[in-house]
Length: 217
Image (cartoon, rainbow, N blue to C red):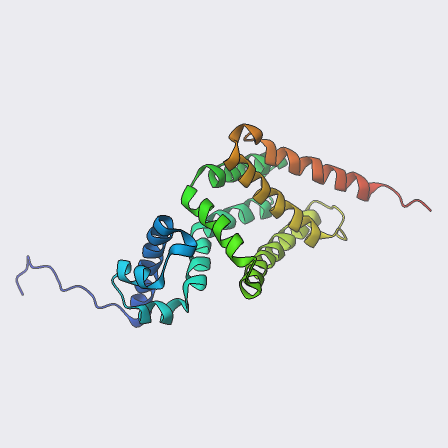
C-alpha cells in the first residue's frame, strides 16, 4: 500500500450497523411524517426514503407507532435530560433553576413546529386506540417517576418536608410545562418567557408554607 493511500474504511460491527440503520430510519421518518402527517405516512414510504426494505423497518421498530414514539423520544430526550439535571442540581439557586427551566420551555415552544404538529396528531390518533394511549401514559409515568425522585432528593437536601406527595407534584410540574408549551405555541404573548418559573415558585412556596403550619387539632 502506498504511504499516501488512505486505509480502507473500518467495517462496522453488528451493533454499529444496527444503530446506523435505526438512525437513518428515524431521519427518514421525520421527513415523511413532516410531509404526510402521522396518519398519512406509510411504513413503505419511510423505508424507501431511508433506502431500506420494510422488513428492515419492522425488524428495528415493529411498526409506525413504535417508530414515531422513538422519534419523539429522540427529539425531546435531550431536553428532558437537561431539565432533570437542572431540577436535580444541588448547586443552583432557586432563581437559577427557574431561569433555566424557562429557557427550556421557550425552546420547546418556539422550536420544531413539525414535532408540535405531529404530537397533536398522535394524541388524536391514540385517543381511539387504548393500547397506544397506554404506551403514551407509560412514557409519562416514567418521566414523572424520575422527576418525583429528583424533587424528593432536593427537598431532603434542603431540609424540607420529606413526606410531601412528590408523585403528584411531579405530575403537576410536567402537566404545567406541557400546557404552557402548547399555549405559547398558540400565542407567545400569553406565556411570557419567565412565566413557568414564576408559576413553579408560587406552587412550591404555597406547599412549603402549608407543610410548615402546625396541625390543627
